[in-house]
Amino acid sequence: MVKDMLDRSLGGTIRESRRLDGVFRALAHPVRRQILSRIGSGEKTISELAEPFNMTLEAVSQHVRVLERARLLRRTRRGREHRCRMDAAPLRDAGAVLVKLAGFWEGQLTSLDRWLALTPEKE
Amino acid sequence: MTVPGARSVVVVKKALAARPARVFAAWCRPELMAQWFFPAPGWRADVTADVRVGGRYRIAMHDPEGGVHVQEGAYRVIEPDARLVFTWTCEELGVADSLVTVELRDVGAKTELTISHELPGDATILREHEGGWKGCLESLARYLET
Image (tube, rainbow over all chains, first blue to last red; front, top):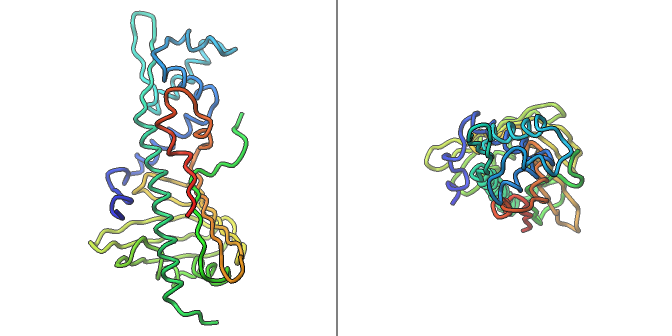
């Protein structure tokens, strides 16, 4: 269990850490979160995505590029039309890290508790 | 625009049978940290810690099979017997420069300890998610109390 918690397969590289930072950063903007939740229910073109926003197509495209770099969004081209769909895998990775962190700290505090009980108080 | 409210994404609490001064010492004195800062019996830890604001720490946890698990960072806030804030990087878990706050509250002869671990970026977004990706993110807003 402890080994699971510190599962090496999840991380181990700086690249991995940057990728996770990229996911959190991509999610840190309200427009990008709305874009994601809209493509979560089905594929959309850039102009469809732009509809609810008072923004230029170019501004929306920039947000789409940030999501694309974080691998949260995949784009396919059909002629001049760009269709966007969501890729949820990086979100699951981000969630797994938080669950691991919670397990990690719970383990440390249990260890601290044990140590306090076994170590006589000096002062 | 940022999301208002608390930014902590992982919160763990525990009641400890010792006064805050003793618990604080356990977190701040490297020779004491080395005795408990690992997840289970059978492990051990090598700790170096320059416990002052801006000072760095490094904890190498050794598992019973010989694996080494490193975390490191720098101290941001040190309030004796009350609060400790430090940055936390663990390449193994893919987390860099996250922020950990340890708070101690005196409850009788005991200490209520709260760890809040905040990840890079504004992770509170994970609470106001909606639509098709909701299921994927439920664990992210998890609030744990023990």
